[in-house]
Length: 503
Image (tube, rainbow, N blue to C red; front, top):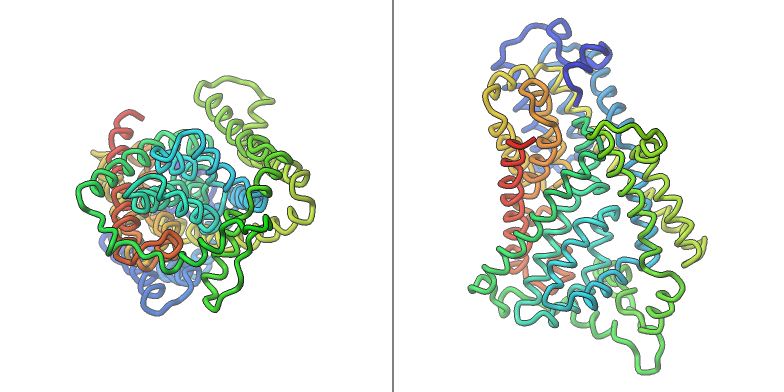
């Protein structure tokens, strides 16, 4: 969303100046905005209309209803789409491509094995959770889940009696928190672009939030599990994965294990995607010799360090042109992508890298379009003048709008089931008030992300993947996923509120 100063300097953005639309009462603007959002939710949930089409229709209705006219409504929608693509289009593409290549190289499985060896099984929920929530967030969520879940499931018995409960909860919390708080998670990139938050700043603030959120949330859920919240007999169901686990064991003849096709297409896909976790020890050792783990992740870590360094230079107002250039997010992630391609090509071959890139392009397409139409709705909301109206309501407080955007994102997520969609929509609705009341947009982005985590349930594909791949019953998944991620949502907003008093 565009700050007031930027809107004033660029008339093409149609940011809701009084002469851009026919005068309308504040109540009418609020009612029409509510109707547009509720209509989009109804189209998605009740009539199963694609979210992209639903958001565009809502934007068209809102523009026409508040008096922008046909021409200005269309310009606002297309301008909002184009503006956010300028900000984050390449960033999302580069991040997803890096993740796809790392996935193909087997780096994720090896990292989890290294964490287990280094920190031991009892600390595994925390170490694996932090790894997934931070350094692995360049990877598309479902891909990361399918690859890491079989390892988490097999390592769960090493933790003890509550191993399945703790690992499932850690996985759910880390996956969902990482995607909205941690750069280059796709939702965090979208929120940063939507609210014009410098990516380096989003990276620093996101890390400050995601690390304590993951640790505290896992600790709270572990406390509840140890006091009877988990019932192994009713909350665990290993039927789906029992045969797969036995098939994944190393064969007695020393050959690599394979998972045969099954009638269940979803199971077959998950099993085949996760198959590297069950390969032979010989294969794992050979991969380690060919490509050290630190070498595989070095390009990604380098790009994140460059972004962080650029942000620090900006905050401290230090002039270092060469580092500022390398710290520009697009340049930093491009360096990371090129480095990842070169490193993994030596490890797995050019053909595998090309296959990974093809998958990455396929995965990034839907994310880019959804992010873009989220920007269209946000631009239309701004053009309707909602920022001035809400700015007056919240002029005496910076806490209230954070709670409101959290609540809106939470309600949208319960209805729609999409973390990214609910976060983008909620942030877009309240983005206009940030400059009006002096609220740092990064706090609004984090609050929208936190709210979008509330109540991950049966409308979410992630819920069913965690339920099936980690050996849980639906009842168990409602505890580990729905309750666990909701706890993280509340913990996050409780951490964000004091941050708003400091920054």
